[in-house]
Length: 155
Image (cartoon, rainbow, N blue to C red):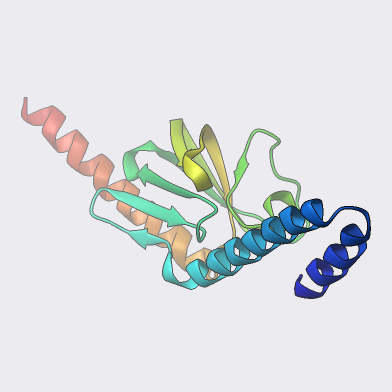
C-alpha cells in the first residue's frame, strides 16, 4: 500500500500537484485505518456474557445477541453456500471463509464501523472452534429458556 501511494503520488503529481497531495493524504488515512482494523482484531473477540453473546470482528462489526433469540446454530462446511439474507461478520464479507450460521427468532442490530447499523436474523461467522462455540451457545440458550419457563410458571 505504501508503494502504491508513492507511485500514485508521483504519477498524479505530473498532472496536478494539489490533486497528488489530496490523494496521498487519503491513501495515508486509508493505510492508518487498515492498520487500526488489523490491530483491533485480536483485541475485540467474541465473549459469552450472562444473558447474551457479544460477537466482534475487529472494528468491522459488533453484535450483542441475547441467548433467548437464538433459534439454531449450524456449522458450515468449507465452500458451503450461505443464505443471501445472512449478514457476514468479518473483514472481507463474502470473500472470507465462514464456518458457522447463527439463526435468530427476531432481528438483531449489527453495529458496523463508523456508526452504521444493519438489522438481520441470520449471522454468518468464522469461529476458531465452531463445535465448542456451538455447544456453549446452545447450552446458554437452553439455560436461558429454562429460566424464562420457570418465571412463566411461577406467575
